[in-house]
Length: 275
Image (tube, rainbow, N blue to C red; front, side, top):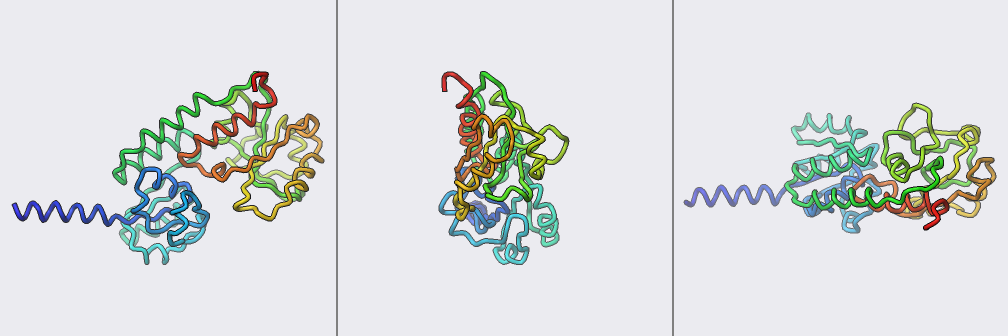
């Protein structure tokens, strides 16, 4: 009996001492939402939500994590996304358990939440996934379909590269859910880079610019919006260019449910008679 009790206590101690390092803000958010935040011992830069995450040690940017900093934290599990592949491979040499997840589309976000929940023994996955599915069903639908271009970040100089939402990404999923079409139709990556002439050629009916004051605090919003309206497009002609400033928009986590609701409304508020 004493041996059995000792074994059970040992197992409980091992579970309590689980040490997770997250290589992206999205994964950090999901771990907290799965109520396993106490197991996190490190995360990447820009892990701002929830507030508790801001107290965690930073292991570097999500594109260039520092392997030495990760090792110092003695993790039992390191979780990353596709772009973390090289870092995860290096950690395998140190016999550290790793998990790579895909958070590109709405469907892959749901699948990854489920996979991660099973890995860290959380029972909260169903609730998070259900919230996403409810948002999908309730997404504002358009009476008059139009082409939408979603822009990453707000800048007042548009002569240089502009990043937009392309294909096989949750932003395009939301465009389609709302009954609209992606203004970007060429075959390319999920984040195409456009110049001034490319934007004119696309001629979107609507332009939605994703802005975060938290990460872009010094942008002159009025000047930036004026620059966009100076580009000859259907969107500028019909005064259908808007800036959406929410801290969750760029984050492919369980909070994509909020993004679905916010962006589907933004896409259709000037088109549906009921809005």
